[in-house]
Length: 310
Image (cartoon, rainbow, N blue to C red; front, side, top):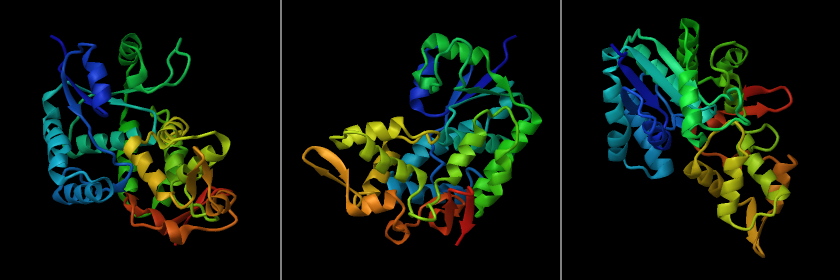
């Protein structure tokens, strides 16, 4: 008799692509972006749901009822995971997906699920030319990734649970030792490093995503917001941010950039921020959280790679 599989996928585009493979089993779609906004360790609790609804409505104008329909309903399906023989996680190599993935694993821990858990991640397999997101793969490549899925061992699962717990805590410094740990999560170290660089730079007040956006404007001939968004998405490294997240960052930087004669350029403030000759921490400050830590409660020192708590 065939094993009953439960697939947990990161988002709708991957789910649609995966559904064409006709794999057996049920699918739960993880429609969240836990890499931004406040998170509470106990996923699905009233406190967790309220914190997420408040954040998504304030920063992204997503109404609370949407959250119920798109995410909480899927969590309820996931609460039945004990009825399956094995669980397959489908998550990408970036920070966006990895934070969702460790949260999903933590939720399975909460349910005391003791079934084999496999990971299909967008690592580069033999014969593939470059690292691509799962939803960018051909059907044949995606099936190949599924056939090469990785069985997560107890150490992997405990590491994921610990990373989620520390991410939800108010001290991101405690994540640093986890960067050096070996596990079957090939990209976890890179994602944790990227996370730490999301806190404002000690000299400029810009974080790494914001500084990267200003750099793109100086190094490319960018003539429209659409083109700027395209570059920002393509050259963001390990973040995996989507359109709406990146547009919010572009909007926050509007005092540093301007469109003149069909070309984006930096204002004087933008130039000073980029070359770190002035600190714009005060001007940029808001109450955004990354997990359990407020973005502007910490400063990142790019020379020592340390975080300083304010």
